[in-house]
Image (tube, rainbow, N blue to C red; front, side, top):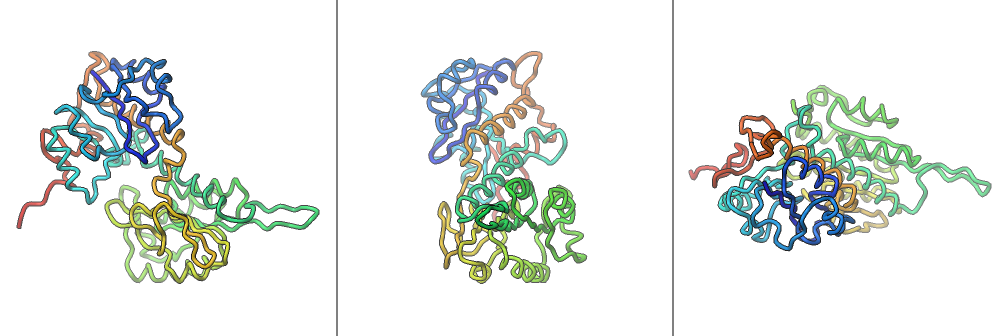
Length: 376
């Protein structure tokens, strides 16, 4: 059983294994081969992998039974993989039918880590949570870096510096971490979300909850714990409330994403114009079109003195920490695919975690949500 850790295509700085997870993969009976330079941008040297028991090679993936990656293979990478190999990565399948067809045609079995079901047994494999947690933290750091004032209240002999007002839009994993981080830095924090359960979570972190709490709001959560798309009427009421609130804020962080859909527009150009010069908006949804009108990917845009921060791949801005958590998510998933007695691959295709994450198998797209639609 040969497991390869592939080097990512630039500009992705994360890596799919750390020396710690390499040791544990080897203990499962795997021969681990790491592509040369795979960990450099995450602060891991080739010699660190060698010391952990891996072989470092320029061609790690060719004979591998399992290929571990951060991003879906692109630019013809999959052509180097052997037919039948298991490829495990963040696959970004929504709207990428051609890429899924390429994986299927290459004969590889692709698993999408972001499709991990929200069940207790899969929590240690949940890459969306592990990466979003870091993104929420980094959003506050990025916002504070572009905001020209201190976050906590400071009482000095020269006068008092007032506390910064931070508003977090979306109280999922990223939003809750942003709230907690901003609170630790001494800011006055408010937050909003369309899910009723979020109110208690927000208030438990010491922030004030802002929302139109009508009947639609009480039904605004799916069985899997995701936010539902709200009606136009509710969106208008919520937008009016938020518009008034945003005028008084110093830093706004938006985190709203709906799986498989463009990011909902939360902040209009008029709302941006209403904010004081020197204010900062950090948009964590820019890869899906952004929550903020006027946001630009990988740029800080100045709109009449209001800065809109739109970095893509925010977890990658903390590459070492993000790689460490992601590598453990992968390790826990790979353990599920290995028979510990025989130390060989033994995929249980009836396991609900396997069924939820398998995209391609035996030359076809097998996930029910992404199978090609028949011609009319």
